[in-house]
Image (cartoon, rainbow, N blue to C red; front, side, top):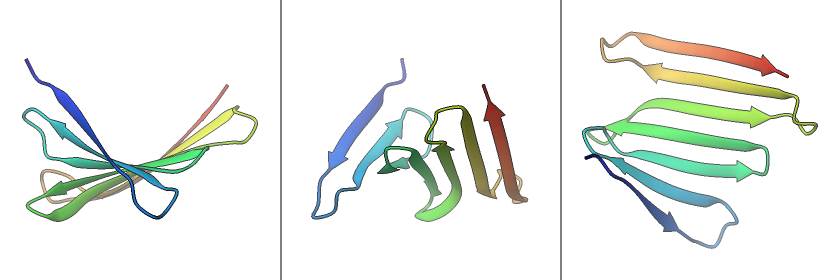
Length: 85
């Protein structure tokens, strides 16, 4: 069975950061930017491979997700998905 482990790192800033370790996957860093935005940064061999940012509108009706980085085949990706209620 794979497990997900959350480690909370607290520093001087108000940004909450957690390292996600997945069985069989590369580590990812979860960053809560504010009440409406989060970011997940994935790394392979110490290099950032993808950055996934999710932003919710203040009224909660729209979610924008942006994916940037390089996929497993080495191809650059830059996708934006907008979801509305």
